Length: 394
Picture (cartoon, helix red, strand yellow):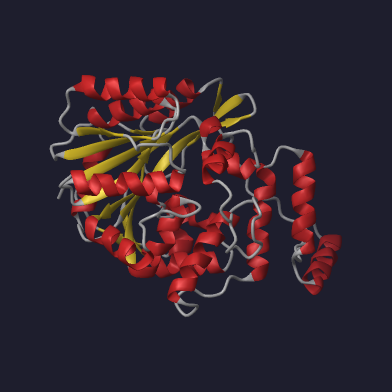
């Protein structure tokens, strides 16, 4: 078994170099390849990154660059195809440039993949996230164990409008290592591996349509940083001037989120429901049930909290309201009973939320997240996924 990491990057030379170093310095007795696919538009960025890759003299590292800049989903798909053609690896995983592998974690992850080489393996992460002028260090309690999860559970929760409950165990393309045969099955059924509105979730539901299960290593194997450069965060904020604006420029005038229940709406996880529906059209509603309307609207409403612009947030609320969403979506009788109970007794206070450590910058947050943390006895965020522990030896 041999792993191949496909590092996709665009105009972020320093971030890409840091990600390369974090992988090449891993303590791993097993061989692996690292394909760096540079989609940079700026010639200077491409020159610097290519020179760095060549200067390492590391035979595991392969630098490639498309002839012209590509839209992100097309670039990811092209990079994976190139990696599959150039590397003899048995497993492939996308690594974006804002992701750093923690020291020693690759050895553990390799062992998890080796425990069942025919099955896709996902892994968790810690996040340094910019909030205002400070950087929050999001460290999720993990058990360190390996779990078997049925893909039908991912499909069911999505159809009920419960995407946020999938948490870090959600098998996105960028947090998975996928066996070569699984990638070939996806390509044969859907035409491409991940070329869709979002390559991450686009691959997720294609995998769920074809494979019955995947494994999840409940460890924060990597650190994700540079959130101000995140396309996903830019999309959630509705920031047309950020990386999502660059994404849409390369996307061009093609239809956008036209398969979503509310077509074209840039709000919350509407892009995920778009990808779900595209796969549903191929495999049918028996395997991919219709999306519950109330759950869908409730899930989109979670996205309101990401929007800083009050004018845009107000407009998104108006659109949701026109489609049937209400601030309090409980049935009228339940709302009445709740008010009556509240009149005679105080509502119980929710459990206190632990403060999230904050730092002036990414470097300080990453240093904090690199500190060893004890494993938890259980991870309550995994409960909705009904995981089954799988023994493995790290």
